[in-house]
Length: 210
Image 1: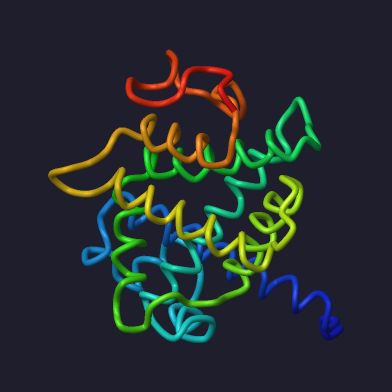
Image 2: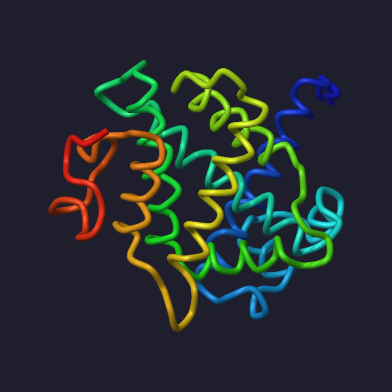
């Protein structure tokens, strides 16, 4: 048997890791964090159970990487959807809508993710997070930021705060209101991105007031 080349081995490792990340997203969304075991994730991914600990030091780190991958893929699809645009205001609007959309569409998953970030190990920098950061930084640069290194962390913090507000048990804020506040802060017209049905909620700025 001819040994596999290093490039083939690398691709197989990449695919195994991707399957584990996807399985994590699916199972945590279905069952919740505590009910999802590492063995369940390996079984769903069709991978040997030892691969989980080979790639990730623990379940919390695995979940953060999995959600960052989902956020990256969602944001990438939003920025590249038709009609394609190179307008920085449109791209920033799409980025905001993509992240708020995940809070709306994946509440259990995103709530678990945000709770995990507040744990002792905090924010984990992984390849998936770095790819997500690169896309968000690109949107900030396209918007016209003169200091991306300052403005990107601020946007990230604002989006994280908005996600928490949408998901806050017992006192959630409407995503449309948070969208309006973010759009007002960045001078974005309501019609940019993927606006929800109807105009901006009461008490915010009118359509077209950038």
